Every structure is written in C-alpha cells, then in structure tokens.
Image (cartoon, rainbow, N blue to C red):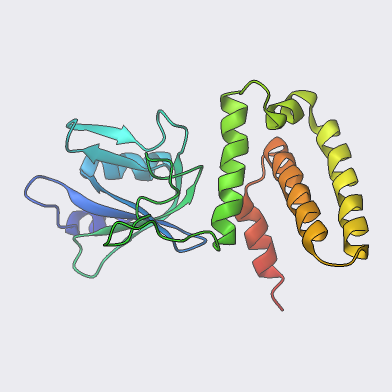
Length: 210
C-alpha cells in the first residue's frame, strides 16, 4: 500500500477503520475487526494481521496465543476509502470458537453448512496436524507419526496407496472412499513435515487446468 493511499484512508473519529479478512484461495470471509494506523503499519511491515482491540484498548496480533496466524497476501481498499479487505492465508481457524470462520451462523442462529468446502476441510485437517505438533496429545496417532519421523510417514503413504488400489478393484465405492481418506490424511502429515501448505498444492493444481 503506497503512502498516498495510506494518507487517503478515512478512519473513523475513534481512529479506527473496519478490516474484513478473506481467505485468498477459497474466497471465504473469515472475520471482521478494526485497525488503527499502527495496526495497519505493523500488518504491512510484518506480513501478518494486526488489529486494535476496542475492549482491551491495545494492538493484537492474530494468532499470538492460539498460533492461528493470518499471513497477509494483499490489502485492498474499498471505493469510499473507509474499509479494508485483507486477503490472507489462514493457519488453522479464524474464529475463537474453533470454527473456521466467524460467520458460521445464519440470521436465525442456525449453523451454516460448510462441509462441502473441500479446501476448508483439508486446511482444517492440516490445522489439526499443526496443533498436534505444537501441543502433543497423549495417545494421538498424529503425534505417533510425527515422533517417528518422515520415514515412517512415507512408509504409511506407500501402504495406503496400495490399499487404495486394492479397494478400487473391489465392487462398490465405500472401501475406496475410506482408503483415499486414509491416504489424504497421511499425505497431510507429510506436507507438515516438509513445510508445505495446501495453498501451494491448490496453486499447482490451478496451473494444470487445461
């Protein structure tokens, strides 16, 4: 964001400006918060989202306690210069309730159905693996794989790939669905071990759309 744009922003009398946060890959609206000039400047400088808490009267860095950081890809300004749009790569969930998005209910209070958003589901799975890595849980199979290291994960991927082939040769599709889910899970663990995010996979797949 250039200095001229920064100077033209219309902050409220309180010194704040609304900031909408959107997943840059799925288009899902994740949350809305407020920024002051310091929060905006820190966001630009650090590449992660900073906001101003009206209740605590201080700056806060999204994910500073939960680890669910937002890596800011770009910042857009609306036509009236009084609202910001942050396009981010969300690590884990955006909402303090544990939901992917803060907008998980409709106007009647019913939870919205997001189960068909495949990108969100895979990223939630990756977020779970990251959470287990940061905060190990006794008896967790994910922690077992992470403790054993990448060679164990690679061996499991080979086994699961073979089971997908076997399942696909059998009548019906239920077994194949089950085995593909197992394979995707182990691939997700491998991605964590290699430092790969699903956003990088999505982008590679988009390049292959011919």
